[in-house]
Image (tube, rainbow, N blue to C red; front, top):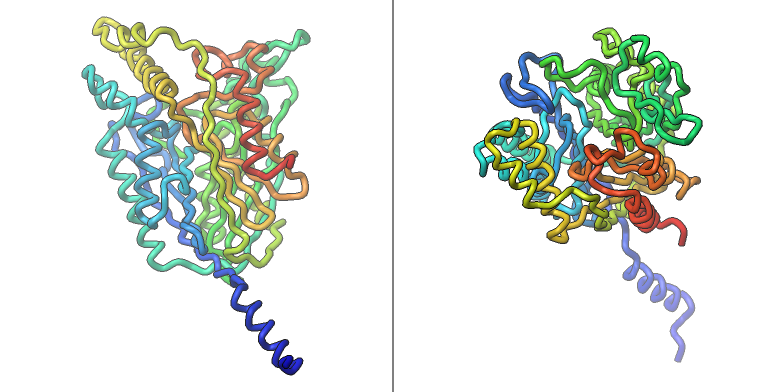
Length: 459
């Protein structure tokens, strides 16, 4: 005997509801901690003598039905090897997630510290400890960042809406590699270019290939903004190596936005700016820092004002990872690097450089790769990439998903140095020189394949 029609309908509805997974809300925990080092600490290239403006580590944890995801941007020149390991492990522990779900990036300021515990251990073994990394300071700020994240995660905010927007940044970025008629690098347009007769041809050359857009993703709890993340691709130097601690013009722009949007945690990432800098517009004067910071801040404002908000929940979050093994260019024999490192008659700079080379050489030869990561939030994607990546990779990523909102943070695992395009390694110039890049042009195919996979493109 068949059950009545209304009862059959009730049974079917009950079965469907039992198998329906209701997505939970998205929750976020933004954090910010002052990481200004003590005077006397080593910055990227010199000792800190005074503070021009403070340094920060800022980030956000994103909670859903999955393990939490953490994104963190640090005012350092670079974080490498064991430094990356400790940063990611500490932040992961703070929110009970795994290190591969934590992305840590530096902004690459030159008036800020570097962090590579693997290199530091090598230097300590030959009496050079402290010449590159202030271990006590580095471990203190990692612990403080983890504590700030843990405290924020104890009271997460619900993210009901996601905002995306972009604004054009004018007269900041220019391509560093000015090519001649033969297709080779004729001028390297450095981060700062004083207006001398020798520099004028490079300064007057066109901007070249850049990504002029500041991209922004924001999280909202109803009509209240909670956090704003921005991405822009350029070397972040104005004047530098004068003994001052500074987050430079991106940090100052971020500070302007703090004042303009109180209550919002502003987190800024450097995009793929390896072959991009402010040299065309930067004469290395203090005034230039002011002008550059205002232009970057204006890009942030435009991105904020152009923002479109859409509802968001946990079902729209996805996190993907891909481990890559980049080819190693010829770094010479390990025994020769070890000999330089141990040579007490060699200059400290040569020995420190040998320690950097050894740290990366041993990493690659041990078979340890580099983890790339991709966060999806609805139709917005953020790729997390290593090294001083050329801007072409950022533009290629956007072409892979032309109908979506694609952002890129580079300067993650910093140890490979510059990562150029395949053709760039045939063009000469500083960025793809033996001194600057530890990989080869074959990296392009490896990274593009990984990017397509992470973005779900080309399938």
